[in-house]
Length: 514
View 1 (tube, rainbow, N blue to C red):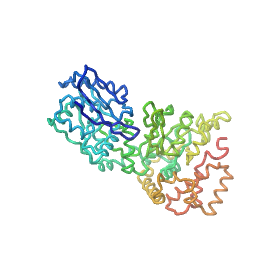
View 2 (cartoon, rainbow, N blue to C red):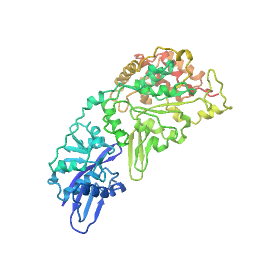
View 3 (tube, helix red, strand yellow):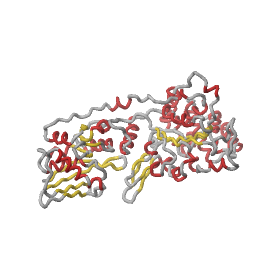
View 4 (cartoon, one colour):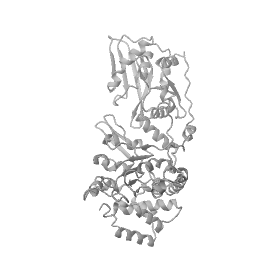
C-alpha cells in the first residue's frame, strides 16, 4: 500500500515542501530510503522501528521503500523521523484514514521510546506550510509557540508518537497552540537589562552613539583599557528604534534556522546584539560549514555586531566582512548549492590605541616602541576602515564624574530623538528599495541629499587640508553631518553639523598614530 505524508526541508532561511512516499508490500524484508537522504535520515529507520515496537505498533515484515521527493534535494537531519513513521503506520493499515495525512505537515525527531525531540527551523517551516495551503502543522511541543506565530495555520505541539497516531485514528484530540503574535511582539519590547543612565560621564561618546543609531552608521571606539568602550557598546540596542513586525519575523527566522531560539520561545522583539570572541573563524562569522548555516553577521541582522578588541581578530576574518557590509547580505557558495543569508547589521568595534593601551592617555605614558602604534593600527585594513563612519576617541572617566550620585540621561529619552531622526529619513527615502537610513545612501543620493552651503564647503575644504584627511573621509563626513542635521530637525546641513562630523574621523588624520 502506498501512502504519502508531508514534511519540510530548511534551505537557507526558507523551507521547501518535501513529499514522503511510503510503499509496503512484495519481496523479502528489506528497508530502503531514497531521495538523497544524508546519514541522519538513513539512520532514522532504526529509531523509527524502535519507537513503533516500543509502543505496541507493528513494524512491517515485508519490503519497505521510503521515497523523499523532490529527489534532487539533499534531505538532512533527524526531523523527518515523525512523517516517515506515520507514513509507515498508514501504509501498513494501522491508521484508519490515511487520506487525512495529506492535510498536515509533520516534523520531529523520534527517541527510541517514541518521545518527540525539538527541531530547528520551525518558523520557516510553518510559513511554508501556510503558503502551501495545509490545514495544520504537527511538530514538537517545544517548537509550537515559535511556529504558532504564523496566522491562519493550526499548529499542534506534541510530545509523543502515540499522540499523533491517536489524532489520525480519531482516538485523541489535539489542541492547536494559541499565540497572539502582536501581543507577544509588543510585550517587553522596551525592557532592557542595560541603560545609558548607568554610564557616568562620557557624554561625548553617548552623543556619538546616538548619531550612529540615528543614521545606521558603523562606529569604532578607540581608547585605553577600562575607559568604558564595551559598557557603552552594550547599551547601543537600548536607543535603537524598535523592530517592526516584519523585521522581527526575519530575525526570528534566522535564529530559528541556526537553532539559537530557546525552548518555547516566540517572536524576537528586541534588536539582537552579537559579540563574538576575537578567536572566531571565518565560517563562524559570515556563515558556512558543510551544511551552510547563518554566521554571527546574520544572527546580528537588524541589530548590532560588536567586535571587541578589533585588531586582535585575524585579518582574514575581518576582510570577509567587507562585501556583506556593503550588500547587507552574504552568499555562501558550495559545489551543489548557493544560499543567501541576510546580514543588515550595524558594526560597532572597539580597540586600544596601541599594544600597551595607553597611547594618548592623559595620565599614563605609552611604553610601546617607535612605530608600534602604526603597526597595531595597520592590522585593520583601509578598506574596512572605509566602511566605518565614526571614529570615536574614548578617554578615561575622571573621579569627579564617577563619584556623582545623579544618573545620566535615560536610554528612553535618547531613543525618542533617534526615532524622530529615523522618521525623517524614512520619508526622505520612501520608495527607494534597500535604503532606510543615511548610512545606506548611494553616491548619487549623497550629492542630492547632502548639499552644503558655501560656508560649510569652505569649512570642509579647510579641514581636509589642515588635518590631512583622506579622500575616503569626504563621503563619510557628509553622511554623518546629514544625520546630525536630522537629529536637530534641520532641513539643511549647517557648518556646525559639518564641524561635529569632522571631529569623528580620528583615524583618517595623517599623523594620528605618530
